[in-house]
Each structure stands twice: as structure tokens, then as C-alpha cells.
Image (cartoon, rainbow, N blue to C red):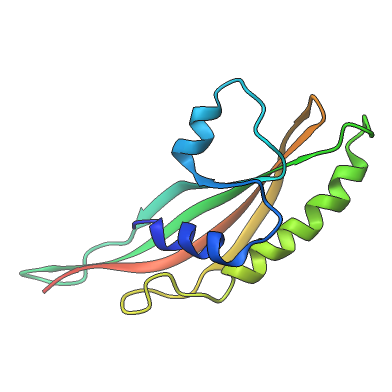
Length: 140
């Protein structure tokens, strides 16, 4: 699945972010700290079910992607204040994505799967919210 519609949705719906980008943008940061708050869309998985047709194919795909959020809080070494800022940003992302179908003709709406802290260092809190969407691979 092409995640371009998901990235476009995030860019059109989210406010208050310095950067909203994709996996390439996240990778280009390398060892530099990104400006905060930032948001990066990364595809994480694609799982296909068996083909259901003879002479063609139709497979149900579950696509996993994460929205990586980076928030800053240099005033609090424990990161607890950053968590407060993070919750408002996570809420924006969930509102933008949950229930929205990126490929309405061949897929289902996005659903939330999980969230977890990636790391906290140098005053930056990195968090990933994971989402799933079902779509279909077809040739008839």
C-alpha cells in the first residue's frame, strides 16, 4: 500500500508540528535531533492472507504503520512534562486517522493498534503509535 494518502491526511489535519514527514525524512535526521514537535509516518508491516481465486488473485492485506512523534521538554529530566504535551499531539493523530479509509474503493478504515515509548534522551521523548488498515490485492 502506498502511504502517500496517509501522509497527506496527516499534513492536512495536524497543527502545531514543526515537521510532518515520512520514513525518508526520519532517516535523514540520522544522529541529529529533529525539531520538536515532529511527526513521522513509517510503514511497519504487511501481512497477506491466502489467495481466494483461481485464474487471478484476491488477497486480504493487513498493513501496519506507525506515527512516530518527537516532543521536547528540556525543563524536566524525567520526561513527565513531555508526556502531557505528547497526549495532545497523539489525540490529533488519532482523530485524523481512526475511522478514515485511505483507499475507500478497496480498503477499510484505519484502526488504532498500540502505542509505546521508543526512547527518552537529550530532552526528547520519542513515541510510536501503531495503526492497522485492511486493504485488498486484486487481479480478476
